[in-house]
Amino acid sequence: MSSSKVDIGFLEDKNSWLLHPRFFPSKVGGKPAWLDLQNLPLPTKLTCKICNDPLIFLCQIYAPYEESKDCFHRTIFIFICKNGSCCKTNTSENILVLRCQLTRENIFYETEPYKENENEEFSMDNWSKLCNICGIKAPSHCSKCKKTYYCSRKHQILDWQKGHKEICSQLNNPIQNNFLVTEAGKSILFKEWELVVDEEDDEDSPNTNIDIEMEKLNKLMQEKKAGTLSNVSENELEQYATPIPVDKVFKKFSKRVARHPDQVLRYERGGVPLWITGNCDNINVPNCPYCNGERQFELQVMPQLLNFINVGIDLNSIDWGVLVVYTCKKSCNAGPAYKEEFILKQDLTN
Ligand SMILES: [Zn+2]
Ligand SMILES: [Zn+2]
Ligand SMILES: [Zn+2]
Ligand SMILES: [Zn+2]
Image (cartoon, rainbow, N blue to C red; front, side):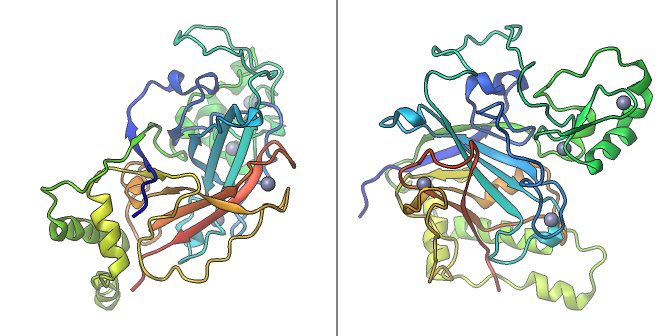
């Protein structure tokens, strides 16, 4: 049996200002808390490969490598397309993972931890302009007031419809780069949470009734598949309501998850993923495109996360079994500030 420790991520409510980049947060939803604040990926990079819509920030995990001075700060970011129709079984074309890292001495942050003081000055003036809606790099601005910035025409239109129209002519100062979610942002971003990471319990809880836990999980997955079925014919209903076949891998998955039923993340650098079902043979993890070195498993996002981020449950909402992330083993420094890593989506299929 493996003795390596797995860390587990849970969600907690937190004041948004405490999830500011200067606190190096792990978080879910809201706007990304970028690490390198200047060399952000272009919006064209953060675009869905299937429908071309802007990808939306899902979560980030702060995971420095203690032994490497290049990785004194290190964060993994995950973005996803919100269109359910781009979410195809066992493919991850609608998702993007980026890795960013910084040395302790850098132009963005002090070398010592920041005090938790809400009113502390942290100037963003010289850094990249951010989209008022989604918080990614914003190359364009409102042509009338020239005071708000957008990643794309789509988000500019959304902001206009959700209230910018009323304030556009009254804006005297540029809207400061702001990590807080605007009212218009709320309509499109995932609900914001802090992601708290802690060690997994060593042993299965003696009180765990594996059959009950499996039933709970199975029900959860089925509900997501079935969704709100108001517009669905009897035939379709039957199709979506068929129980998911219980394989050995799913049994193992359920048993391990029962130690911490609310887990939304598992972190085990260089470890092995906890697969949700048996169809995980022949995985071909491509080498790091920047150093050509091997990649290794680093973390996985669990299906439980879907219950916390207001995705809604219907046939056209995003879904996954597990999202498994592999990163460059050396966490190399080659390439752009935000380096693309490999993500695999495994679904429970009938
Ligand atoms: Zn899409
Ligand atoms: Zn945007
Ligand atoms: Zn304007
Ligand atoms: Zn590499």
